[in-house]
Length: 167
Image (tube, rainbow, N blue to C red; front, side):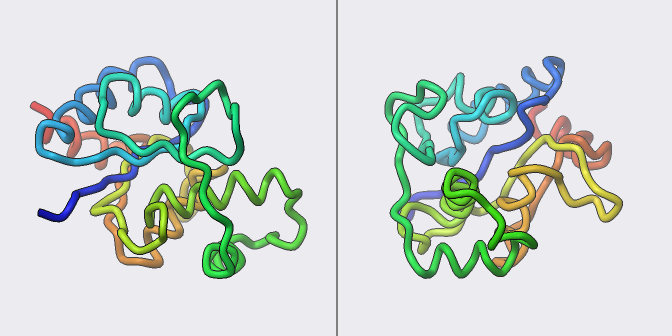
């Protein structure tokens, strides 16, 4: 049976009142056989990770945010090409920023970039086009590029949908 993955990411500023929704969602998805993909950051990433054991946590470098069992993605021409296509200032990114964004590519497409997540769930403020801001934007745009459904708990309609699903 093929492993089912989902991407659970978001802002470091995810409000505490969203934590229980994310915890319930991640537990329900684990019960349904889904493996979480996330990034070891504070906020939404940590909320998705804290209650589940089925998880692949992609980190940009060793000791990132004290993550013990993280996966450091291999940098490939393909992963860089994806990032170049979706990041408007790729050429201006520091080496550390590139590594942070590349791990977002893996959060959506998997360790070898060949097993896309079934969907992405996040909490992140949005721009005028309802696209998440910050690092979550990278994961969101990778998902959209690969026609992966995306849900942002910051948006009322997505929040209501997820709340109905977890009840």
